[in-house]
Image (cartoon, rainbow, N blue to C red; front, side, top):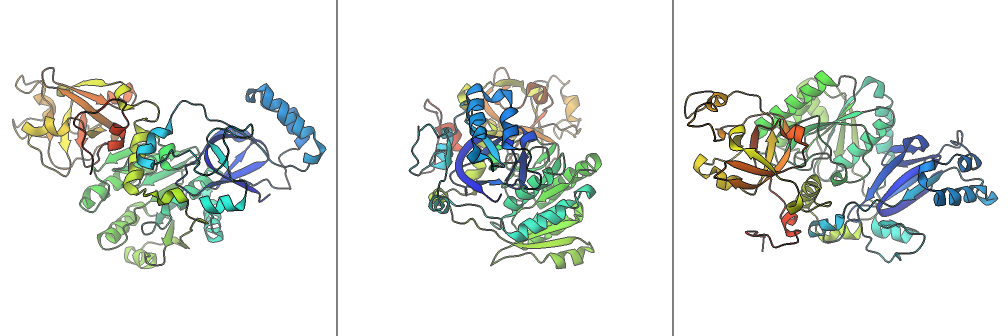
Length: 507
């Protein structure tokens, strides 16, 4: 117990005996195989032995007789031989580490990361029999210190334990704090800890600039059933409900932003009453940002508020609750720092880089380049067009839409057409407008199903050609393209094998 192994890279892990803990989540023999990610620009992940001496989880001899059949005969022989050796009789935890299947290539992210995210930059010798490709364990304390290790404080662990003890009450927990205070780190730790006791946990994303499970620019609800054991770009998933607000900061769109949060939380409350919920807020805690935080608390009525503080900034949560006449248990926690900042994190990655990584992962550019992805032809007549936060004349709309990222929205609303005085859906039957898209004005809130890239527009056949990872059955529900201020990362285009026409980059 209390032993740990720190590493960078990625690996598949199966627990054969005992229990280990990762980011608060306990992995046991019944957990099956889990995927671990520890990119080199983050503090290293620690695989911790959490086996309790009292239950042990089985003996070494027993595990040698009951190995899973799907791990391969060679591995079975090695483990059985090891377990038969008397000098290993005191072992209470055995893990099988296996190489990731080479179905993807994260080196495509070099244009953002500056280095391959899963390539170790130290002096570990590769190609030796003991090494697994893209898995780089640190064998001494010096390597751990050089690469950083996320060390959680006892205050964090005590707060999480108290909330886990109330998991049967399906608590609503709001995590607040300034930028870089550790909100996302704590929320992930809490989520994984909840999953030790609950089959699913809700995650309400209010940080539209650094989303955990979806691309930026969305207020979203995810129902999470698996632990998150890596940075956001390694565990994107389709949301239960999402609303596209079109930008990475709510500063200029506070009304639409709060409307989206209210609609998302209402959906959660009406559909998942017996599921615990974690609300991840943004780091804007002054002036309008504080007013929006108050409104989020008013909308969601959390039982617990975790308030992360730094040396220079904190939210006076007690005053906020007093002004709202709302009672909640407050945990005020100091930011937790890694034991040392990893060297590669000083290579200049900023929030926009992390947003780019998520979009690259969303469009699966680490598997195939954009130019090789299937393209869907969508008739103009089946689509409405909405430009958020900007005014574009219809005569210029196709220029503004060509080669850009759009939100793919299912909007069931019926709107008045300003040009002909008819509902827009009825205009489709008018020969004058039959083959043209309809244009919406103002701000409309409707469920966002995902993102797409308009690869080309056929002005003769009146077709949009769209790249999207959405399955076809979901894509058929899309009737609105919403253009906001979220752009395709230039790195997605720079990575193409052939020259890309019309590509401009910052000098």
